[in-house]
View 1 (cartoon, rainbow, N blue to C red):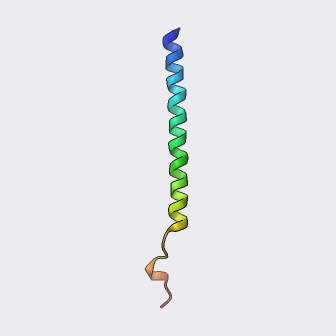
View 2: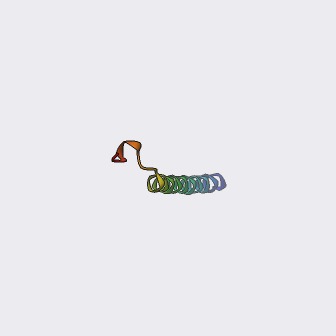
View 3: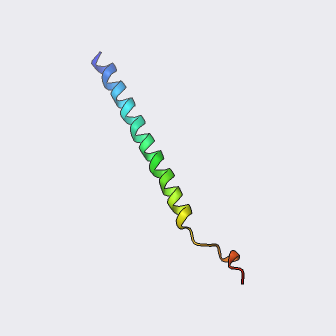
Amino acid sequence: MKKLLLFALAVVGGLLVYRQIQADRAEQDLWTEATDSVPSGSSGS
């Protein structure tokens, strides 16, 4: 019974870590998009 409980806790912990990594990655993508410099081809000169 203890092994099953430890396994369940490990799975839940792994899911929480995975979700946090995904959220951090999504936030980083948003920041990258928001702070991206304008491509040189769109300068209009």
